[in-house]
Image 1 (tube, helix red, strand yellow):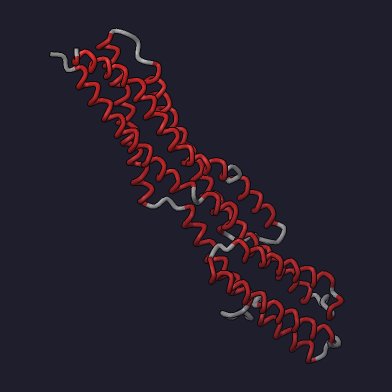
Image 2 (tube, helix red, strand yellow; image 1 turned 180 degrees about the vertical axis):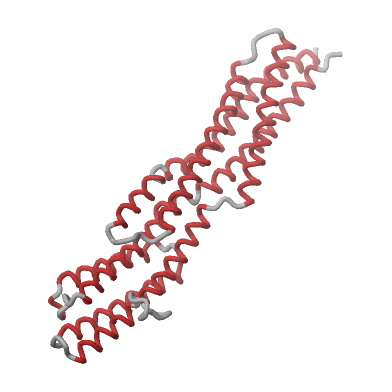
Amino acid sequence: MSTTGRDLVRRLRLLLVLATATTLALFFAYRGVHDDTVPLSTASTPGIRAVDTARGALRQAHDVVRDGGAEGDTSGEFLTQISVAQQSLALAASENVTGLAGRHDVQTVTGLIAVYSGWVERGGREPEGSPLRAAFLHYAEKVLGVEAEAGTEGDIMSRLDALRGEQLAEARRQAAFPWELWLGWCTVAVLYAALCGALLESGLFLRRRFRRPVPVRLSAATALCAAGVPVLAWQTLSAHRAMTDAVAGVRVPPAGPDAVPEVADEARGVLADAGFWASLSNWIPLGGAAVVALTLWGLWPRIAEYRFRGQR
């Protein structure tokens, strides 16, 4: 008595289980990496760059004050740099990288910048060499904390350093590849190998048993599986490398204000296609469904043929 019908049913069940399991594992493993690429490229790194821009603008404003250029509200350069710092901090707050605590820190720093500007303007109204001028500018330096001997834990620069550290920690978390992701992708690799092997074995079984070419539908399912998973795995590896490079690019504060745009362009470039590749996760279930449908379509006619024979 022929067992071909039972063999086909057994192979079909195995293929459907493997295809479904591979699809689910690939979906969650892929999203585990790519769900962080867009926040890293659109929020975390821009937030860090905004803080760097604010730091650079405040240092330039301090240079204006130190060189004696801030005379009350008549120093256009000083006010310009203060405005740049405030706008950059507003951008850092809008990115919402570190949540409510980060927004609170930005609000505190913005208030301290107003205090700093007030001391500078009051000092600028005093005549050159006046003790009051020196005292006001000393208070301003204490609030700003740009000089090493003037820095305290609650000054502007210290708070900006702490905020940047929190943002960088979040960016590193997004770019990390923890053991859960390693386990997920190892599971994908095992299931992928088992599925491809089962598809190839089923195709050879059909060709050997029926003495005819392998059905086109089963061949298409094999090709889709064999090509799709490696492409997504390769892109995931490329995305992870880009995320690591982006974090490395913002790890150290720029040497000067002129270096901030260059760092920004580098970080933006390595993650330019993050949104597109992240959107492909929505197509993984469709690809898995296509593999299941093609497999079912390729094997079911043979199974039905043997069932019909058994009923005669």
